[in-house]
Length: 167
Image 1 (cartoon, helix red, strand yellow):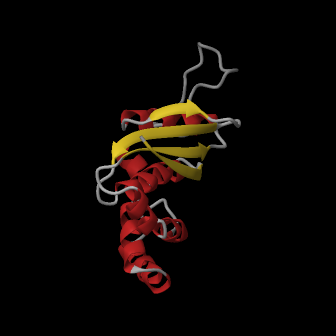
Image 2 (cartoon, helix red, strand yellow; image 1 turned 180 degrees about the vertical axis):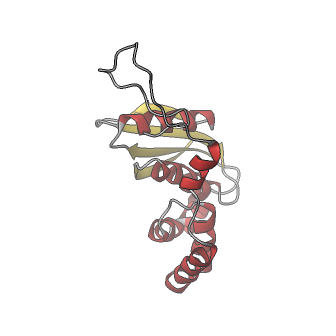
C-alpha cells in the first residue's frame, strides 16, 4: 500500500544503515488517481445513456465506482421504496458488505462510522453489517444504498445486499 510518506523500512535493515525513502508529493498522489481524458469520460457517459436511461448516467457521475448495471438494478426498486416507505417513515437500512483485504475493511469501517453509521461484524470472515436509521425523504433510500455501495467499491470491496425495516 503506497503512502504519501513513503515505504516502511525493511525488517532486515539495521538501524545504522541510512533509509532510502522515495518521498511522494500530494500532487503526485493525486495525479495517480486522475480520471481519463475528458473526451474519454464524455464518451463513456454517451455509451451509458445509449444502454441505460439518462437517470443512470446522472447517478454514474455522482457515484463513479458503481456500475451502470448496479445503478439500473437498484433504480428498479424506486417505486417499491416509495410505496412501502412513504416520506416521513422512520426506517433502518442494513447494508451487508465484504472485503478481501482486512486493511480495506478497517478503512471502510472508519469512514462509514464518521458518516453516522453503526458498524458490526458480519457472520462471515471479512464482512460487515452497516446500519443507519433515518426518516425517509425523497430518494433517501436510493441515495443511501448508492453512497454505501460506492464507498465499498472504491475500496475494492463487494456490496452484497441491503435490507430495510420500519422502526
